[in-house]
Image 1: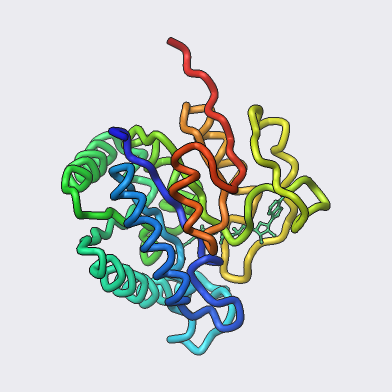
Image 2: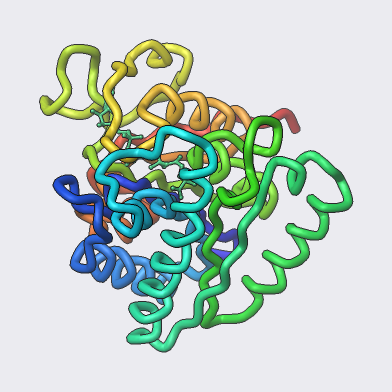
Length: 258
Ligand SMILES: Nc1ncnc2c1ncn2[C@@H]1O[C@H](COP(=O)(O)OP(=O)(O)O)[C@@H](O)[C@H]1O
Ligand SMILES: N[C@@H](CCC(=O)OP(=O)(O)O)C(=O)O
């Protein structure tokens, strides 16, 4: 596969629900799955949430920070914890990690966008480097926010011309309204038909929720990028998903005008 894939992983996958500490076992399985997928299919960019979630225990909190200064301080601690874990784990597979923290201006301003694109493509030219992107939460507020990380992942996927975006969440995929935990919808051809399927529930430390995911998916598929929502707690599904199968909700890309 020449075109890279983008894998986005949510806070609910990376942290333990009870105390919001980083879940080392979940991270190891995720890193293993990504390393295998890079080996089989080629390039991959990881968009990882979890900075705020991973930092709260340092401040004696066990819930999402309520004020901006605390949130930004917490993310400064959590982001280093997150990257420390990724660096160690990818190291077992002889892979290096690269950290890219971005705000909205890095996508809005053409010069800065080109600069991010060039950096990412240089990183992707190295066979054993996995770029890991997050919002620069310590400085992002109001207009500087890209939004949630589902949208950040779409912006990254657009920038690098990704073949596919996989959104790893704490659920298996998209459920019909009132049927969360039932059987997931396996394939969606028309995103507009499912836009109101999202219920208000989100994970304790998560920001986006399903509504944000569907908005991000709509932008991705309308831009020609096939997108899957899958269970990041079962990351071994990734290879099958990238191969076109695998247990997930697959949103077909809209055909682009010739
Ligand atoms: N129709 C739906 N299908 C699947 N999940 C849904 C739906 N509506 C709401 N959700 C909720 O979306 C949440 C997943 O999004 P989120 O909390 O942002 O996870 P993450 O941190 O993994 O990105 C789940 O807790 C789930 O209960
Ligand atoms: N940038 C934030 C994540 C924001 C976000 O969208 O979180 P999530 O809904 O878990 O993907 C962080 O690293 O904590």
